[in-house]
Image 1 (cartoon, rainbow, N blue to C red):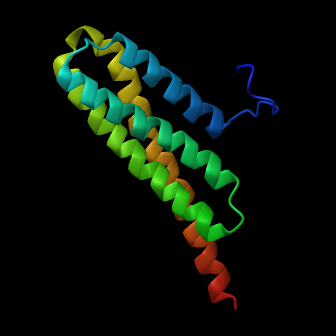
Image 2: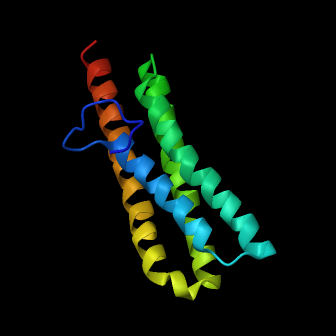
Amino acid sequence: MNQFSKHVQKSYDLEERTAKFAERLMGLVKDVEHNDVNYIISKQLLRSGISMGANYCEANAASLGRDFRNKIYLCKKETNETKFHLRMIAKDSPALEDQLRVLWQEAHELPLIFQKIATTIDAKKQKSSVGD
């Protein structure tokens, strides 16, 4: 946990996981060969990867359930976009294969987590509307 995290570490903290993922993306971009193509892809990679974490933080601060759900879907979308950009960087950066594989795996797992959260929200909403 870094110096900016003031909350108590939970056994499973998705905010921390998304922040660590974004930090690892930042590290990757520093290691990518600098050329015009990689510059563009790296910018997009950072935008989508960091946005995913920021949207999850916003979801947790949402005042309405609908806002939470919408932010979770945005997280899923941004993470899928990040996975695509990782694939593009891998094409031009074979020396970074191990680092990319770990990040791609995380980018594969996170949308599944976000989908499960969204599915759970939808199921609870449907259950509560049936009971009305």
